[in-house]
Length: 283
Image (tube, rainbow, N blue to C red):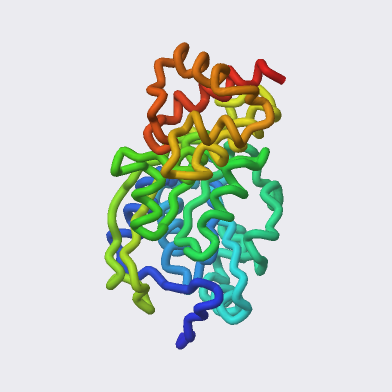
């Protein structure tokens, strides 16, 4: 098939077998897993996921094997995939859906909380939207293995030791890990930047005791990073309604042993969560 990649859909097709293998390995794909794939493109990862499940499945065990649910927005590619995987679709190993992932209902097609894995080479222009959609929803996946821009992957795991709204937002719901770099030459067409595989495991909402606490956490980090050159205590003083004065902040910082001159990027996730819990008692 000759398919002209659509820039508007962020299409860059992965052609590295080692990277495809590593995505399945990082996802710990098993024979009974339900895997949600976003933007299967020409089906390279889809094929690898299906083969990984088939290789591990023992027909004699009497249990139904897993399946792949692939969401493709491009009509041309959707039709191509229908033909390429007609056998898999027929035996219900593959459910192919023509849809926009941002409109896709996370509880559709039998997807249940913590009972499926999201593994995908995602369109980079909607990376943030995808992370937010599936990490913050009630129907979270068990784990996510994503191919993203290398710079984004490094920010997510805070490789330089500096936190960001992105890294803290991921850590609020799971444990991110940088798996491997994937050079831009392993894509068709080649993007302008290198990519990397990340895995997010232990996905849940256990860090938050209530919806209000979850909302406060995100209000807090957004306020804390509002002016990067200012120290955190000053950003919080002017940015949160529940903060009465600097003395209140200094009291919390003292209890948590946080340096008053620290900036938002210097505070690790655990400290942000502790600040949130202290502030939640104000309401």
